[in-house]
Image (cartoon, rainbow, N blue to C red; front, side, top):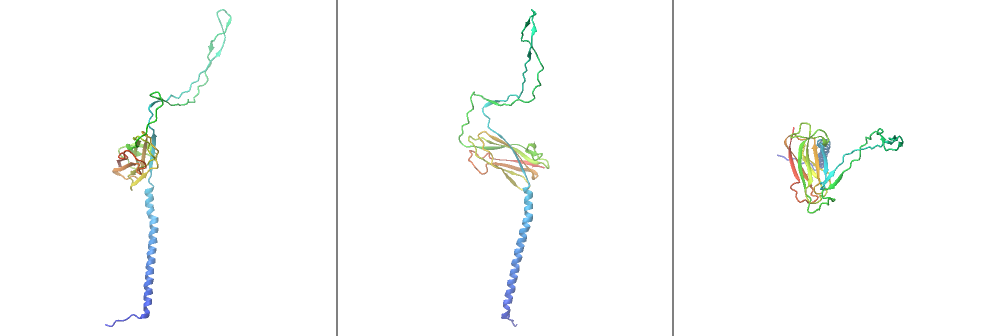
Amino acid sequence: METKNIPENSRPYRQSAINTLAVIGFVALVVLGVWGAIYSSRYVPAAVNNIGAAAVYVGSLFTPTPAPGISVVPTASSTVISFGNASSTTGSTGSPQATTATTTSPPPSRSTAPGTRTTVTYPINGSAPAAPVLYGLPDLAVTISAIGYLQSESTDSFVADSSVPSGRRPAIKFTVKNIGTNVSGGWRFNASVPTRRSFTYKSPLQQVLNPGDSIDYTLGFDQASSGEKQELSITLNPDHTFTESNTANNNISVNLTIN
């Protein structure tokens, strides 16, 4: 069998063709990569934004530690006192006598403006309450007082219930209290809520708590995942911004039934 040799002068053309195909393939890969990036930027964030539209609603009420005294709040009232005009009468001897008899004129109209409300604290021991002695470490503790749902975006619309009706926003009420013997630092809390895609709410910095101080929170959310045993958990001071005497009471969780 006779073998045909490729002419020497045709080899540069063959190499040029190979180089051209390589360049075309490279350009095709670049175009495919750019198209993929454009597709991702157009469609992937849309799904993320749908989840990002979920909202967490938080309301709070701070309660300072009570002072060892009795608070007296007088009833607001307004009183008007009017005096009559002096007159003269005739005595038994027929001579005029000056007397202190008075005639009563109609009182002026009573003022309807409320009085000033005041609050007075009378310490039990008869002296001003002494400031608490601080020692040791603070200790934040969390407890859940109620589960239910919000009827609107306001946390004031909370309704306690063992299950969450369809279309409502699941919600809980919980309390954070400093049961330690020293002042806390600024702190945060995380709330892991059962949304359609897992989400953890990270609170802004919360106020310092003295021993005995507490804050009552109402926390609700939308885009909830339906079903039984939907877990919601609260974690206090997750960044450990200050040292506590006990961290075992910084976590709590509850299972919600969401229809």
